[in-house]
Length: 384
Ligand SMILES: C[S@@+](CC[C@H](N)C(=O)[O-])C[C@H]1O[C@@H](n2cnc3c(N)ncnc32)[C@H](O)[C@@H]1O
Image (cartoon, rainbow, N blue to C red; front, side):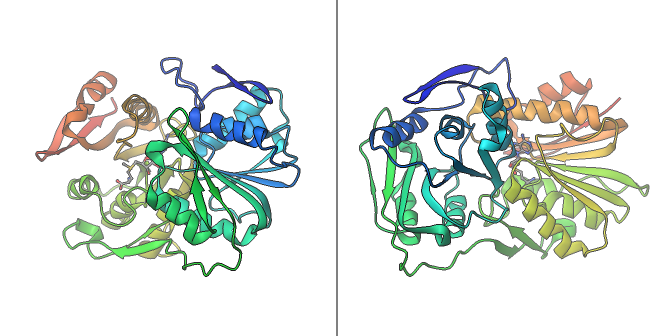
């Protein structure tokens, strides 16, 4: 836990879930810059304020007692939990911030729109489209991000969807985005969600349609690691079994498992609301309305009962800050060990260099390589 100093006071903040081994701060210079700007410019916060994409609740917590009608819109379950936990940690009323997911109806009016620029440009595009009808000529629109996160393409989105846009000077490697809303702007259509057909060499899913909400992992094409995984999924056993697609993204992996095994009952889990909505559409498009399945937004397997699954399929998150993603993969492996029944299998695909076999061997007491390519390995670990 760390102390976040703002013009409006000091706040104790932590990420969610708190990891004592990783004391990563729950805010950065971009959050500080935006709050300082609001204070220095005395931006009126007594109307309907919407914060889009608050990472760990720093913006929502700092503004909770200043803005009476504060709404936080997020695609991340972890962020929504962080907002609630940080409000509580600072003795703030949890109802001070109305937390909505990116799948919920957007607010009907926005007087101040604060955007923590997301990592995914597609998610920004989709959310600006969804919020645009609530923005009016007098809306103050301010975005913030680290300089590495704000590109010409980012500014173009604000410009095309909301109105004329400029950026501030960089301060401590953070930058602000200012947009003057132009309600009469001829906005292009929102291209999201995106639906496409899979290639013909991916087993049970060949030629099938996949649905992708904005921001979902590899939303416009099949990831090469996922493709390799689809070619090396376990064979059906002939017995009914409970299969978890962990970190399901658009749901291709679990949908393939369900198509290959009519007796499999699927649970799709992801921390992204956009991902779980995509997985549900992908599954229903390919398996119809009656096939049993569950769709859960959550942190790894935290909400899944112990010894309740026979197979966990996992393509763990990677790419972002190495320390964080290692921690998430570890949490997912540990969760899988807990939710698997004795004899149950965790099957994982990963980049060869990530060395997942070491962690799996330590956790499960063994690990088998099912398939390998120069880039990827598919590993299998059995719950004893
Ligand atoms: C590499 S993608 C895999 C997506 C899909 N299974 C595939 O193979 O195409 C990893 C997924 O893990 C999800 N994820 C990241 N952190 C998570 C967490 N703590 N709990 C659940 N899912 C998480 C991401 O949102 C992302 O959809």
